[in-house]
Length: 262
Length: 321
Image 1: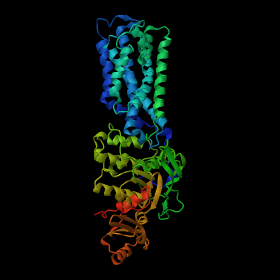
Image 2 (image 1 turned 180 degrees about the vertical axis):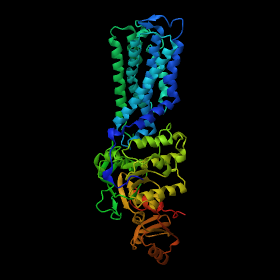
Image 3 (image 1 turned 90 degrees about the horizontal axis):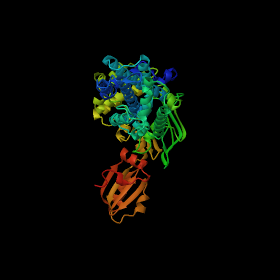
Image 4 (image 1 turned 60 degrees about the horizontal axis):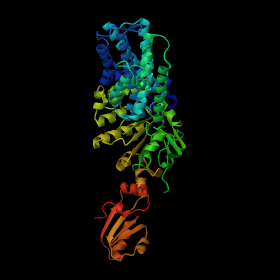
């Protein structure tokens, strides 16, 4: 042993709440090693883009300042980012179910440092997913839009997906199982369909009204907005912010009731 | 129920700050009073067993010492610090009985992760070797056996070289040899000044490995002392005899008799000096079929933690034969 047990005065508290690059690296490695996560967040959005987004019967039709392939590319980037963020949020609940959260509370790691590390991992993963879809689009060559639209749409999809980090957290607390994503995967696919990521939903129809109230709708519309330009609709922003409030409130409510042995 | 104090026995290091100081602590969960008023001081270097039945308040008290929850009233100090401050300095660690591990990390990653959170920690390889799990370093935690996972938890707990180690039912699932090896390692550690508090409901384990036993029941400390002192608390033996028409009042007046129980033709007399009782029964009465049984730690435990402080011979092994 290099440390003497009795030298109490020499004991130090770690800086920045115990946050460090070793733990961050292991967290990233963990996520990259999870086959389910990789399939959901990288393989599926890329494959879906390649299948739907490069169909020659419509992909080169003009849409806004780009083409239909570009429109689908943005949709799939949103889908990938949403899946990545949801997985990141749901991970916390999994760790809680395993007793890892409790184990961490026996170390100097502060709860804030933990949340920051988790957010970095979720955002990093969302970024990887968005980048993967965009690279697939660039290599595939069918998608066409101005460079600033590529960048703006990718950034909106990435940042906006944060909403779904709190969704994952909330759902993880509601469904405390080790593999929350098994349930959330299909749920997100359904929400993506009704939110207008798989196929366009006409805004005037009954389906369109229902669609506008669902969580993915706002982010989908906002991410595609650079393709069309003009002012964003208030409904999109209200949808995104409203659902963020719902998810954060839900997660906070579940966390506050969770006073027992965590 | 009153606390039976046997303190003054522990070899307290003069002037040293206590490893744990619990003063007037209660803890309620809603209408449930898990801890009803505990005062306890542990000196550095002591190995203390926290002994009590399930639901006695052992785990709640350990959670308070770890700062995982706050007492409803009273105060808890660890090495003169608030529990969370002691944890931030790596002065306290704990080994949980189950859980607390991520299945998708390897053994080495788990130790590295934990080590990275402390300001100072023992090198990862050294800790793996000492816990005897260097051969499993690259195995996923989920693929390790229960015993291997327990060794991993132990390795993680020693990373920060804690001054106080809390163990919750530490040897559950270990075989006899594993248990002996575990405790000899713990004892060697304690000699270097590490304080160990372990919760158990294995009476033998408490008696064999702890310097001091704190008996807890219904959220209160009911006895505190060495194993032999605890046993002496409920000292004495029980005489069973067949004696029709026994006069319980007369028998209870004999010297040293604590209780007399008549069941049909059988009498059960608990006494400090059972020789006197036996002599009386055999010479002055028609009693026959005498049996004398000693009380083990088990009985001391039962009588001290029960709601009823009376010592009933039904709890004594062998008398009902």
